[in-house]
Length: 356
Image: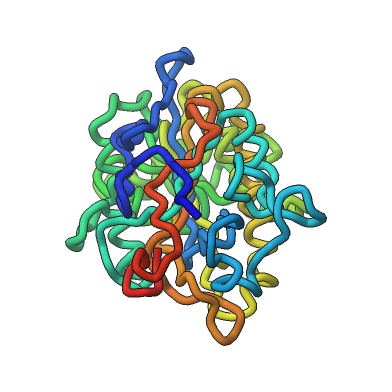
């Protein structure tokens, strides 16, 4: 069977981020067509998403033999894949992404990877987030933020959503953290006393003032939604919705990043991936809803540190691989297409006879 033609982006090459744009041949973002500042969101999928499970080349010769236990029914069948224009299908738990694809707001990049060749989660994540194969203490998104116009006084240009600031956002440019509050409100007089105590501290004082100012901005923007409550949406959707609300404000952050784990599926992959796929999809839909009109000038990049092996292992899972899948979503994306230099699944086209 002949290989499907996908617009070229360079085999096993994924170039990420310059400011609020993406330097990918064939990728055109329409920021200039929507008035107002652009927004860029990066979602890091920790563990290595199996791109051949999320986006299945169901019509590919040899796919059934290689992937039998992990194959899903073809598009149009019960619980089947969601059609991506023939030959490829999207996992049914990604219905929100599929809707964006049909609305020309999603690009799907198959068989892509960075230039590194490592099966270590930690090394691959460092390379992906630093943008370099040598060890760096800063992330490419923070460096890009440093080159962008300064945010309004007292505001941070970047937002790390969750308890951890990923390497991607570490560096010289100021980045705020957002975590939903799970405790009672801090009395204003207590904050005032703490500020008085640290007023002469040249390190702690400014940091504390910035933190309190950022906290006030979040509370003012989110209101009662700033307090964490159990939700059927799940934690990822709660964080994504809050990020969207904060970025929708004209003076809000230009870039944001958050992460979702659960993708390292060495065993029983089919059963284990249903939940994180649904969480990812629900969070991206919540982000779009919260951004409102700002979605028109937003790009969302969903990436993972590496793909997984083409062959299923003996425990019905997959192991660390190389090429995988990435998604570029948003109203600023001219989507509705799959992209990539699809190599096919012939053994001669696999890296080390095992990876895309």
